[in-house]
Image (cartoon, rainbow, N blue to C red; front, side, top):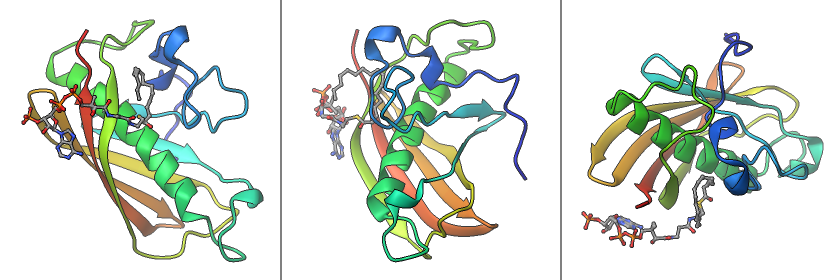
Length: 158
Ligand SMILES: CCCCCCCC/C=C\CCCCCCCC(=O)SCCNC(=O)CCNC(=O)[C@H](O)C(C)(C)COP(=O)(O)OP(=O)(O)OC[C@H]1O[C@@H](n2cnc3c(N)ncnc32)[C@H](O)[C@@H]1OP(=O)(O)O
């Protein structure tokens, strides 16, 4: 079920302008995917509908695109989970004080991902160990898990 994100603030929209050009999720990159991750309770969620040009075999989504959106969902989730862990409220925030980049990304392609439907990405915190944040992810289409992902995001030092 698609949750209503209208009144929620996306993590990526809280990246400062000078760091908002990421191809996958930067709000200031008009040619990018502009993926948006929301923290909802203990998990993160994002929705994305790929354009047909990101086809692998006819009718299915290219795996590189799947990796791209899980990459950005993972780093956004990691930043959100660190804030939650440190009781940093994002409700009225205009920027997020935590920066995370990907050190490791693993994708398991479980089923072909159908083209033409909205994909649902979810993230759950596995652990925070110092600057290392592990997040487990799923990518679901039509109620079927098509890919799972795990990411190790590293919190950058100031
Ligand atoms: C890319 C630069 C961006 C700069 C500005 C970013 C601002 C962010 C703001 C807003 C985000 C918007 C952007 C969203 C991003 C979307 C996602 C991407 O596509 S990110 C691009 C792809 N990723 C990279 O290009 C990382 C390249 N790698 C690095 O820069 C470094 O290797 C880095 C920062 C990841 C770690 O370097 P260390 O010097 O800070 O820290 P060490 O000590 O090496 O690692 C920390 C701990 O992590 C473990 N570790 C590191 N890499 C590991 C790995 N591959 N597997 C397992 N463990 C690993 C290490 O063993 C260490 O563990 P122990 O503390 O000793 O327990």
